[in-house]
Image (tube, rainbow, N blue to C red; front, side, top):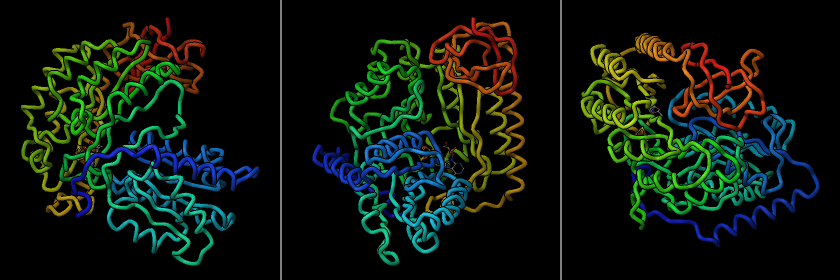
Length: 479
Ligand code: 5AD
Ligand code: SF4
């Protein structure tokens, strides 16, 4: 993947470029006239994609579309795709393919494929040749240009063959786009993207190739957005980046992630600040100290371990070994005894042996993660790991995976068993749909608590007395 590894400068879009996009929105809105038109954004993958979809909805609303959840009846469908694992890709392609029927009922329908999968090498060709219902393909770094791409796609629509379609997804660049419209999904929880891209090149991972090089937003922009979120009543704000711990590199102002946390913490109000994801190699004592000292920061860290074997970690290009990881965990817990620690584990990395997998099981037991996201290794074309010998069968990997899941469940259940009788502070974030426990809430560390209490509590912080515990959730009553 030649394009994927290129280095380039960080550049912010200019006010003129932004103006051009808003002018496209105005023209599209005028074209639609009084006819009610609907648009649907279908999102796959991680929180960054969910955040990007909020911008797509912002643009579409700006263009005069009413948002709907039903892709089958929408006039514009945008599929915001994920490329991290093969499974996600197959789901996307299946669902895009299914739009062919909706399209034959509504020939004016515009189908757009954006996100990480669209940016993958070879995907444009595949969509061009085998998915003729797709009108527009664009990459994640082109989000800010969406109105222009959509306007051009609509202009071409109806032209014969490939002339009627638009294939953007140009090589990644270092663009940072500010002040884009955004239609947020909720009113209590909000995403706040602080950076984009990744420079780490873990050998199994496609992200650096499809999201490009790491680039950070200016701290003052992040601070303004965070202040505005708190003022608007958001109570749970998650700072997003592929590796938040390397925030600030390449900015004129000298500010690192712990400094950003401290700066945001000064914003007054009752809210929780979380962040995702932290690369263990860049998680420092300064970070743990900032987390412990800041009033608003959740005592939760998602620290993907990936494997418990030093040999496998090296083959993954992770830049830490088990001893270094354990030392970080020890330090973090020293600063925050109530720390909630979660992780990602990949099972069956090419060449991983049963003994090495056993090391992962031991590491998981030793660390005692509060929750784990576990994945069976999925080869991604163009990444170094995809070319490594991989003798273990899929069936065997599935057995290992199931063992890991059983262990994760046991650890979580053990941790939860200590909770009944305790009182914890929670943010009540919604309705559960159950009569017995009508509310859902989260502790500051992010544990799910099903709650008895009045609906008027939604959006507020409450003390909850825990009465029961299950493997992946707690149950309690609001006091
Ligand atoms: N196969 C399986 N899991 C992967 N992840 C990233 N790439 C792959 C892959 N090729 C997992 C990692 C990462 C999480 C977001 O997805 O565990 O931390
Ligand atoms: Fe992928 Fe590694 Fe970057 Fe995370 S840090 S996005 S796993 S390359």
